[in-house]
Image 1 (cartoon, rainbow over the protein chains, first blue to last red):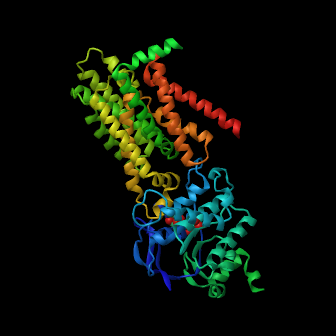
Image 2 (image 1 turned 90 degrees about the vertical axis):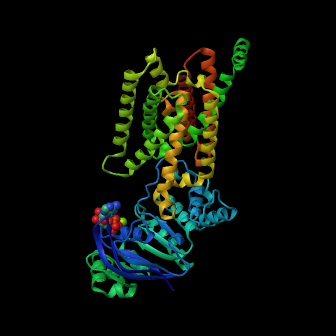
Image 3 (image 1 turned 120 degrees about the vertical axis):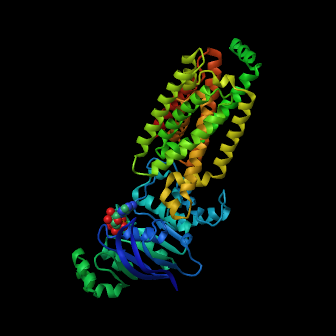
Length: 239
Length: 280
Ligand SMILES: Nc1ncnc2c1ncn2[C@@H]1O[C@H](COP(=O)(O)OP(=O)(O)OP(=O)(O)O)[C@@H](O)[C@H]1O
Ligand SMILES: [Mg+2]
């Protein structure tokens, strides 16, 4: 079932076009990786999907029963307040505000949901700790748990592993894969093409050349071969 | 000690002293609630700028001989709060430069028109009391007391109802926007509420010292506490205690109200800083 369809989408800011004529479809349960060079417009695409930046052309169609409010988002740079005194639980709970209508306070079911998602991310035991005292990897898990609270169906992750060490990066990828296996649609921006190709079901490559298709086709395509070779990952894949 | 008590109870006989204490506590409560947001969003300057705007507005009210100054000062300050927030989002004039422009401009302009048009015989005294709030808290009329009470209740109710939104807005504005929150609208509301607080607080500590009232309790609480809720509760508590203490000291010792409260706030911060250090 198609959850998000982009038709002839034009990305950019004000009148400056970054990318034109983008077509792709994300089905429920997909794991889409968006790759491309720095500045190719990956983050812009995500912001456009979220409605933070208006599209300069084309349209974004939402599948049945879905809209922007059903999406969880993990921004690339979380400009969160460095010295903000907030406990992990408070931050995860704040993901629950993503409900239609105005409600001043959280309901018991919101709290249960927050606890469940903290458990999923393995951070339940630090629920009372202060966010600013956590390590980068732990902070990233907190923000992922928050994103999960705001939507159970689709997650948009903008480079979720930047700045994490290799071990934690691997754990993070496995966590995300686990979520995908639970049926959550994942749309992730990644710099690491090799890893992207390992976990994703589909690849969207943007830049001068645009590619969209299943992972297998990407590996066979010229652009994919070129990129994987550059990253030094191609040889591994041929084995 | 007994002498102090009898002196205090003697002063308590006067309704204006009781009014001052009630209004002072309410103002301290309101200003502390938004302190954390202002500090964390790097908005501390806005409080300062608005206070100067309020000073300018006060000067206009004085010159026009308007008895209920708040009816002039409040709308002008609110409009400026909205404008300042707009320029903050606009990159043509950087936010802090705009604030500096407006605040210094209002201060100079206010003093100028007071000098040119004031009929008062004690100009320096008037200016000093507007800047440092030396006696205005003790000269509140019943009308002003009621206005202060109503505005304080509105601020506190606003804060409680929007508590979770204010949290999101302060912590991560982008995420709040991505989850469908009307961020601009809430920023606007917050600016209006802050303007209200500033105008209220002018009575207590005067326009130069308002920032202290807003910032110190939040900074003190952030030394010790780890969660937003506890920071808010503690800063509200410490702010009220410091304001009460400051007012009582100023009554007993005959010191100016505003600066005494600020001095007590500073002492409170020092204590919290030491406690925070000792803990870590
Ligand atoms: N708010 C903005 N206003 C105007 N232009 C912008 C804005 N944000 C980004 N750009 C420009 O849009 C282009 C694409 O930026 P974008 O952040 O989408 O790239 P990206 O693919 O995510 O890069 P990276 O891999 O570094 O994250 C860049 O040239 C950037 O300078
Ligand atoms: Mg990016």
